[in-house]
Length: 79
Image 1: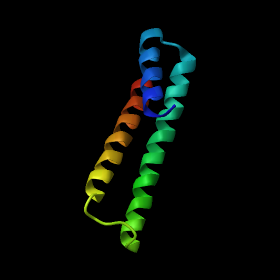
Image 2: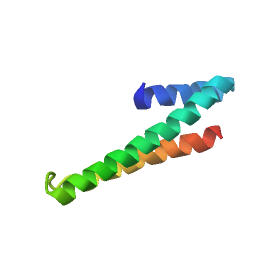
Image 3: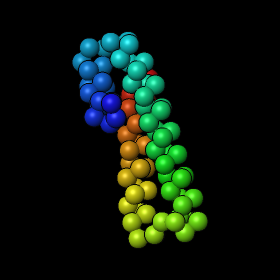
Image 4: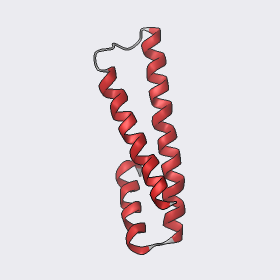
């Protein structure tokens, strides 16, 4: 599903109040936020090892942080 599916489920939950969607959104929010954090950690490890160039790293890490924040806050929204 990814981000777009997650946002559709969140919207549908807001409209319907469906408990199954609420639980799915809560679970997915945690899973996706964790993935974003893991990707950032792996990227930082590649930077330290010299595998990646630092030129675009800030942009990539900022994107991951923004997505992690979106998932975290969506999880808070559904409670």
